[in-house]
Image (cartoon, rainbow, N blue to C red; front, top):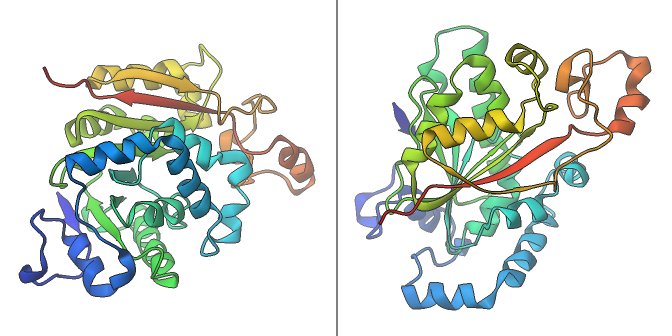
Length: 308
């Protein structure tokens, strides 16, 4: 089950494309800009303007004063401008980010970047789909924290649509016209540990339009690491992630070392969670792990083949 977690919108306000959150933006904040999709001529003109324009727009939003300083402090490790540019992101696209977390790290960049001409969808686990217990409580807190983050800066973060999904049967294709880009940052290791990774990659393939891009960033294990070690450590081999994606139907389009960290030997007592920002280590080891920084990460771009 996939659930739209947005205030109801009067049917008379809906646009020709049934994007409930577009109408919501028009109601909540006229400053959200013109939300109609570009014509073919306009899209061609935007493409002709080149990636330099998109990079400048990204840079401006990365520098936005609405970003949490704790999030901005991670830019040196996560390289948002280079990463999103590598994935070929454009400001007129339909973009879905999978489980952005309560802090909305990429949300603070993507939502204002896409609000004028594109659409940003944050797909979060629906707590109602989980049994009572710690897992449900955690996902409810994540949802609540995420909404609170949006409310703190309603203007730049006005046009976020929250898509609540069932983690047992994830579906992300509730977007008229198809998804251009689907992004997942540091999530695949959780699905591998839970045994649900194949289900998620199949759902990604079903949701993306032909020619659409799946962008993956995750903690990178040394080649040859066995599955049980990967589950325990949180580090995955590139080979495993590529296998999961290609098995679902994707083609590996490119890989990048943007988020590589040669200081990380991936051998830590508490796996990847030993390192920042989790810092699950003895207090006396803090300086050592701060010197390492965040984990060594793979950055992979997959494409759903275009239909003939």
